[in-house]
Length: 252
Image (tube, rainbow, N blue to C red):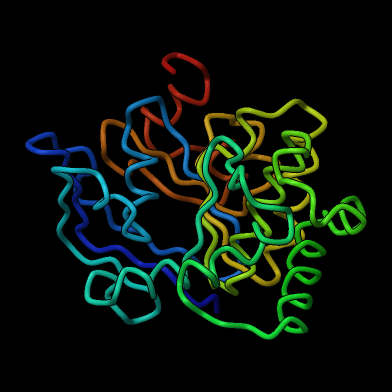
């Protein structure tokens, strides 16, 4: 029986009076890849940001309902602790431009005032870059700026930076939308490798990507979670006509 790591109950999110996520109930299994798809403006990125409390960084943003990590309500936890447990990678690669590749990987430790010995830093950097399938490409360039890398390498560096903190969950918001097809394939392969160690929730507009990488897919429309199912079942036998219409391209 699969164990649930993230669970939302009657979860709502707002920007001022704009109700953007409506009464969402979802259970995300551990060590799985769940794709979240739907048309632009349907609330999927907002919901993703609510999972690790990034939503509340926007002025006027509020939410209610329950968001659990295991059995703990993340909105009753310190936000820094939440973001250590639930890492996030954004749409555009965003390595810190003034930092080296090495310092980008361990940036989370410095930002959170966690001191490491040089030997431990070296281990974290090598392990994280190896897990992000980047070590062999950059091991001789660790002290060059992260921005010296290609777009696909920069995104893998951002993934390395997120997993350096040993989170349990990785949230990815359209992680390949700014990348070329070769880099996209590389990131997709990486996600598949990472799911043995992490639970991954990935927002994507790309239905083919959802079909390739995810075990489950959630479909959002107008702020509602319309359905969530095994990805293969979702694409071959959607339960809701709105999902059917989206998959067949009747609206986008």
